[in-house]
Image (tube, rainbow, N blue to C red; front, top):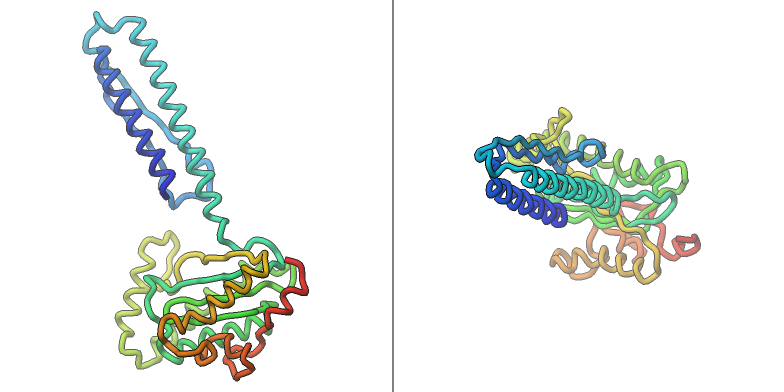
Length: 287
């Protein structure tokens, strides 16, 4: 949150100047309280109102003339104005950031990434990879998810996908996918001989401590990163990135050698996610 932090520092600087000017003119600020709500409460504009509470004591009645009071009022109004600008900029900035990388346009194809908590290498176990592959297959068959490419890495999942129907929001499919796979992953860890079981469960449990709602475990990081596909070059750039991810990480020598990747579908090899729509079919539709 770089820009809001800068505005906050500017506001602090103005407050310091205001304090010095006030003291030099015979006033002492008894209390200056700038209540700026937490960045986490970004969904209600009302929570961004910045309140300035100031009270003054006369320490030199001779110098506290009408002109000094006038200066006090001017500086106070300036400070209020800065606070109001800050709150509006902060709200606008966070509103943009909260939707910038979301799948919000119906029937459009997106490059999507979601990641495990703390980037933990969770999907090194075959049974946990099956959870993701089976869940993708279910969404393809029953939730109108159309997948053009995927790659399951140890700590994250890449997808190029879209919702087939305008009434079915891609964001809701992803939400349900993450919710179901989280529960299934926890159940699988509990039932398995995973050597890191206690460590993983504690990590996923600790990740819930900051949540307002009651939740036992948190497997995925909040949200997801989505980029809309609007050009042929961008599509193939993301496709190459997805399929070459295991090669870059030295997991395999060739993209099609990685079992949990759509590179196998494109090479006409057996794959754990069978119904992959090859990308040429994507270009028959308008972006």
